[in-house]
Amino acid sequence: MFNRWLCLLLILYPVFGAAWQTTVVRREQKVVKVDIDDDETFSPRLENPAFQKDGPLVFLDEAHGNSHFNKAFAKLIAADGFQVVSSVDELTFERLANARVLVIMNAGMYMPRKWHEAPSPLFIDREAAAIRDWIAVGGSLLFASGSVKEEAGQMLLERIGVQFYDTYIVDRELTTPPSPSSSPCRGLRFSRAKNTLGDHKILNGRSELERLDSVCLDGIQAIRKAPDNAVTLIHYTEKALLIPRDAFLERRLSDEAKQLGANGKTETAVATSPLTTNSPVPKSPVAMAFTLGKGRVVVIGTGSAISAVTLKRDPPDGAAPIVQKVGLAEADNEKFTLNVMHWLAGLLD
Image (cartoon, rainbow, N blue to C red; front, side, top):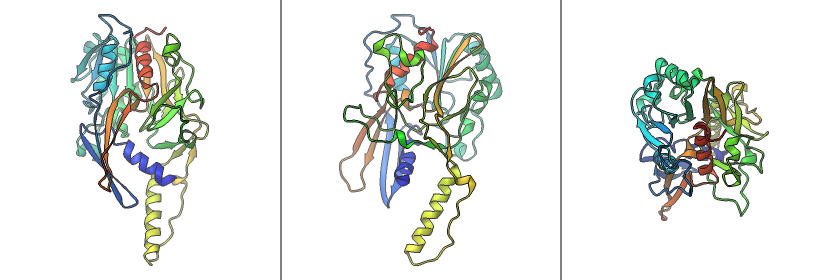
């Protein structure tokens, strides 16, 4: 089970890593190549736009290693009547004054190898301060986590009182096979049936048609800390476990020791330390909403729900490539994205 889950992590976390990225996953001595790209065929399913014309102005940040995997999001909210402008410069209070909503998704996922080896903060202090001050006077921020490196959003998140876990969480209650009637979901399905959705206008929408039943998420960073007034939108179950980073090293060393034993060699057994022991983190938040001064903030521990990508896998046996479309088309992800934007724009009051 652990091997299957670890393999899943290796596949999921690089999903938002490059414009056309090739990920090689090794499992049981087999090599699987995964090509990842924007889903150019994504088509919004909404019938009645929330804004007929002159909708709220949205700044879509592309200046912090996140210039890819946002096309479907932009297409969706534009179809809903929002005016979308790409922002490729430093975010200042003066520039933000023109926008109603700032969207920062997948920060740090499209950075050179040098940065990943020695990361530095992507948001400088004056930029983070400007964003916080803009929110306080009435702006709205959607921050959807990208890179697991804390430097990807550290300066900004500290300013708004948010902190992510720097490691992974596993929740076997969410990995059980879906019922035959469930819509496809490649990652983890958070649902009303599993009691992993909170109570908020974002989840209920303006009508029964906008009400969410489930959301499908990949590559998740759980939220460790948030302001006292934050409301949880999505969370893990009571049985969620935090997997320390050192646990992966221990598992690798243990596997290598077993392989040596299988080859007739002896090796000292790998001992378990407190640093590699799983810790219970019941109901850890994945997405939260809160107000800050006169403004609003939504933080999501992944950009997968509001993105749309295609995964093309080449099986090692030479069979035909397997193509999957994940993100906005899964579960109620599209409804979730629109409801988040409606709340941030003041439409859900």
